[in-house]
Amino acid sequence: MPLPTKVKIVEVSPRDGLQNEKEFIATSIKIELVDRLSQAGVPNVEAVSFVSPKWVPQMADGADVMAGIQRRPGSIYSALTPNLRGFEAALAAGIDEVVIFGAASEAFSQKNINCSIAESVARFEPVAQAAKAAGLRLRGSISCALGCPYQGEVSIANVVDVTQRYLAMGCDEIDIADTIGVGTAARVGQVMRAVTEVVDPARVSGHFHDTYGQALANILAALQTGVSIFHTSVAGLGGCPYAKGATGNVATEDVLYMLRGMDIDTGIDLDAIVDIGQWISGHIGHKSSSRAGNALAARKANA
Image 1 (spheres, rainbow, N blue to C red):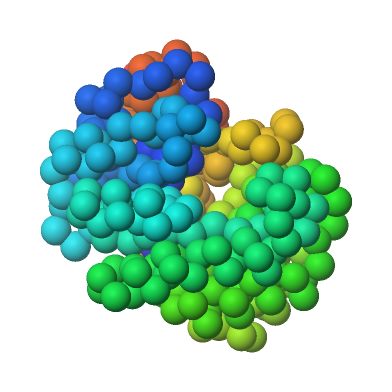
Image 2 (cartoon, helix red, strand yellow):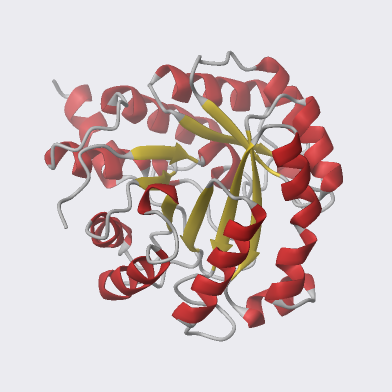
C-alpha cells in the first residue's frame, strides 16, 4: 500500500501532556500553549478535559482555558468528556469535538473503573448521543490497544470489538492507543490491519507513547496500513498515571522531522513547534524529551 501523502496531527500536549505535571500550571500558560500550537498550523488540538478535579486537578481550569484561547478558523479543539456532566461543561465551553475513552484490556478496565469493557463503553452511550444531537464531532479512544500493565498481551479481537462498539455509537474517529508504549512495528501492523478491515483507515488514528523508543517505528508501520492521523505531544510531554513507568507521548518535533523527510505534508511549521517545545519545557522545569527538537534548537542557537 502506498504511504499517505498527507497526515493529520492531533496535538495532545495541552491535555494529555500536562495532566501529569505535579505543580499546577498557570491557566495563562495553558492558553498560550494552545494559541501557539494553533498559530503553528496544528489542525486539531486536544485542549482540555472535563473530568472531576478531584481526580485530575491539573485540568480543573478547562472552561477558563477555552474562554481565553484565540480560535484559529478551521481548527478543531477537543476535550475529554467521561460523562454527561463533563459533556455539558464541554458544550458550554464551545468544544468542537468530545472524546470518550475505554480500554481494550479487561484487566485495565476492572482495575481502574471497576467494570468490564462492555460496561465501560455502555456508560459512554449517553455522552455519544448528546454529542451527536449537538452536532459535535465524536472521537473514541481505545487505551491499552497494544499491551496492558496488568495482563500483558491484549488480543486483537478485543481491539476490534471496542472499535465496532464505538462505530455503533457514531464515533467519527477512533484512536488506537499504545498507552504504555510496549507496541512494536509488527504488532502495530497487525492491529491496524485488523481495525481497518472494519472501519475506513481515514477515521483511524495512532496514539503512541515512546516508553521503549518504538513510537516512530510504530507510526511508520501504521502509515503502511493507510492510517494517516497521529497523536503527538510537543516536547514529548505526558505519560499515563495508571501505567507505571509509562513515559510521554511521542514528541511532535520528532514526528514532523520524520514526516518531512518522507515528503508527507502536515501543514505544520516545524521550526515554530521546536520553539514551542523549548518554551513549554522551560515553564514546567524539565528538559524537552524530543531528540529532533533539542538538536534543531541547538543548531539554531549555534547558527
